[in-house]
Length: 149
Image 1: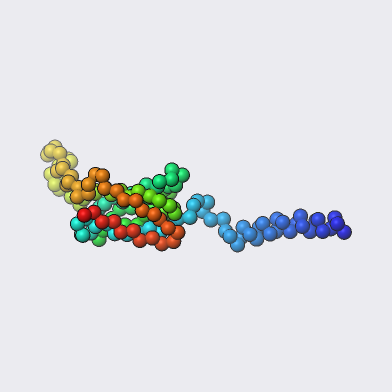
Image 2 (image 1 turned 30 degrees about the vertical axis):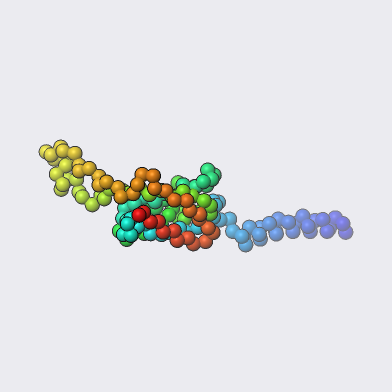
């Protein structure tokens, strides 16, 4: 009788472990990501073509970044695989204004053909080089607006 009870327990363990795996799911193998979006403004106006970078204070976490659209809004993606969102934790946010790429170099008269002049210089950034802001990403959805005055 003791042998029979032991055999049932020995069989029950793998069955329970299998059910637990099915119920909880295998996941994607990575950390939980939290959706992060917001709006970047410069002097109260929406800022287009701004690279928004969240650098984690904990080196074991992944950095996250996004680019603003014409309306100044951004959505973060993290890591090498570009997972949407960011991990829960503390970050330092930096902003870098990107040069608009709407001008075709061929039509502007540089970058080919007989005109070999250099492209026009990139516009000066409205964002100070030392602008940064500490932020926390919480579990769940996060809206983090960023203002440069």
